[in-house]
Image 1 (cartoon, one colour):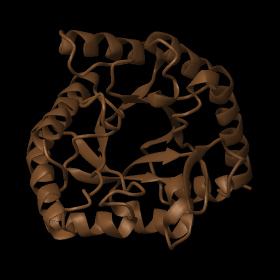
Image 2: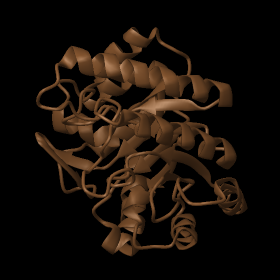
Image 3: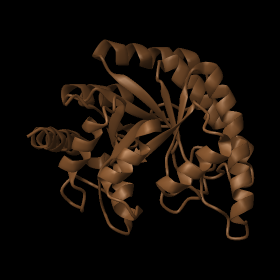
Length: 280
């Protein structure tokens, strides 16, 4: 088993980026899933390419890889969480941000940009939301394809695309473009999927490009440290290994930043133990 573990930077928001990279490296993580936000990498600050080049040099010096994340809560609107989305008013701002994320990924040497749909407004029909989502995705996909970047789409609880079956519907509506892949959050499977982790991973395997992992309880969308929910971590790592998954497996503990100095090593210890168990 040779899974490559990373950590989503939204769980390191009390650390400077260079300190976060050092903490991850010394605990044996092979990468970082870098969230574009005002904390670690502001997508709207000047000298984007120069800043990306510096981060790339830091990553290369540590032998680490990177995925670009686009789920910052208030990066586009300081008063409305995750607004605008690809299915809301003002969605051009989201399209522009995703295209910028592709540019950042290209500069970083990151092969993947992770994204999601957004939630439907109460007065909007699902079919209209699907039309908006397809249109937005097509525009970003064009830019991603031109730059050799995969857009890894994450089903997210409470959003238009919230289950694996919804992602498959998006693939169908877009014509299964080669630049569109899947971000599968293992905790979300526990939270709301009708299938098991093994079934979901195997079903998503053909386009699986990125993985988030954390513990979770059924019906509650709360990211938990391993051992605090209902996730079978051994099973999760075993099936990822069995499908020969080669992308990043990124721990996502966005509400644990205040204790990252403890959660980063604790999560890695849990992953190591689960790896050992999974190969028995």
